[in-house]
Image 1 (cartoon, rainbow, N blue to C red):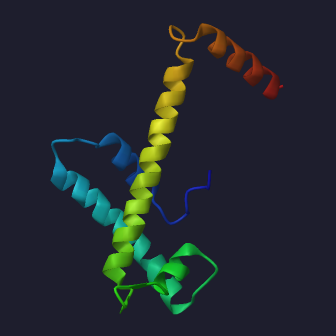
Image 2: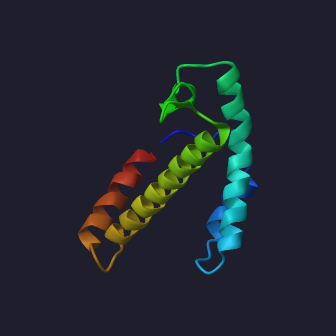
Length: 120
């Protein structure tokens, strides 16, 4: 897993994970706008100075024979960010559930014994 970029404030990550409310779409939208604002500087830098990365490649992409716009690229990047968060959160939740003592005591014991040897 890639480390969290230094420019993403820890407070925003904590806010995202602690404030998920299905009945508060405005709160969700506010957090998405914060993520977009954080990404914007990097997106604009890649447009001005392309590198060997997906953002630079996307700036060169044409959709319906039109040049990529900042709005479209922001939408795409936020969607990828949220999809990645969702995938990681689900994977962690399912792994914890898999190792829960009532469900798989042998698997949990095995993981604990291996963790013990790694910490020596």
